[in-house]
Image (cartoon, rainbow, N blue to C red):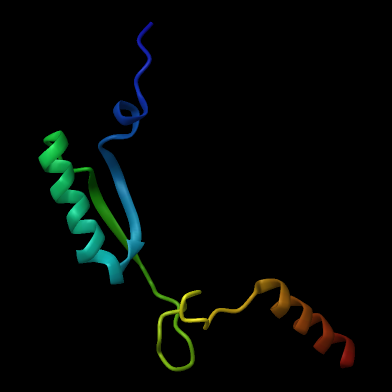
Length: 84
């Protein structure tokens, strides 16, 4: 029985889901490298999702330090409910 490798099983794929901020820097390179190395486009559709931004309009990022911990936010919500 023939067992395909992971590359054979999953390349090319149908959909790539990503944010618009890396469209050129990452997605375009994936397409170019896929065509160069494998002779075909690695995916046929790209789904671009929305970006989560902070109060100043900057992208939420751990490196920027403008993210919140979900557990901490949930604890604050529970505490607010208790005070009501």
